[in-house]
Image (tube, rainbow, N blue to C red; front, side, top):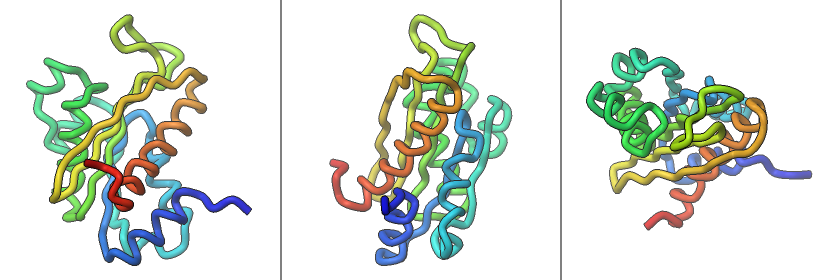
Length: 161
């Protein structure tokens, strides 16, 4: 039997007594859905925000219009502000965010379909990761959610410098 990332995450969060909030765009709540599929997730997961439009990112997560206008929603700068905003909004130890172009439309030469940024904000630092997935919309959303959960686990395992 394969142990899923959300189950590993629950164990780490329980042992460390930490809390996590999500800020999702292209995944539409898939990261939060996966977390809440695990019994006991309410112990460490008070909630998340699905902020698809620019206006939602600004109003709910405190992302700056200047950041969005200068860098776009799919950027390192935006996902870091999203993660920071989720963490602040829900009062958690960790905020993780995801924003990308799931496809099949919406890509540009600079940001092709599948381009995805993840952000992670904690009281000890902030990190971002970039991926370019090469599948359809469902594949890209699934891989983005997997990468977001792995990002948090990597932090909890001390793998981020």
